[in-house]
Length: 282
Image 1 (cartoon, rainbow, N blue to C red):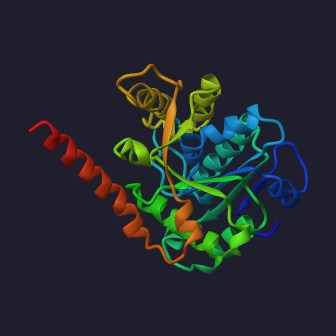
Image 2 (cartoon, rainbow, N blue to C red):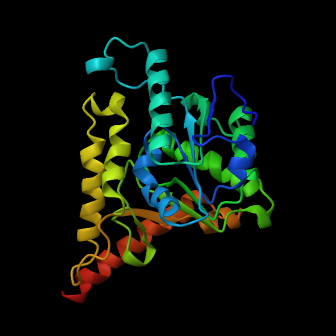
């Protein structure tokens, strides 16, 4: 498998020819940074552990540069930190039994540039090299600039595929902005309450982040549990944990849809729902 950058990393935990392994992936997550996959796509990881014949593939687009360096990592150079984060992502792939883990190592500035050749070529090769049942992406309402840029580059690559090769389901997952604000009819509930011990261990792998004070190993399971509990007021919890997602499949299937208009329609429906509830009891 040929990627555009010499520092890109292709890791197949169980061995095998990478292109052949990628071709067998049923659940694919393409994320911006190391540890994003484990935050947003735990449902996909556990689907592939629980269901025979399924295989999870992870893609990290950026190189992890610019991370805070504190505690045990305070003496690290930025290059050292990138190497540490790369190895942490490999460790997560081993622990979660991913079929393949790709780390494309692009600087964030390149990802934020529409049509950047290396980013475009890598994503085209990945999406063209597999036929996943479901693809997990960042959502366009995320508040992290790089997350939104990665989503947009992925959307460009998916729209460039022949229509019959585009995945049947594409979901935009929460990371740096919860999606519990969406109205219930718009929410896609991803069951992230299965294998809770594994979920925590996958997050703990990223010690370069946790030891610096970002307790994702506590916050992410807590958010999943909170979503499950506050999902409905008049029924007991159906899941032990929920990650919310929005359905991005229409954006992939119809290239004429404007991303901003599509995304803002979610806010319009929330606004109408709030207004209707207030007026109902005035």
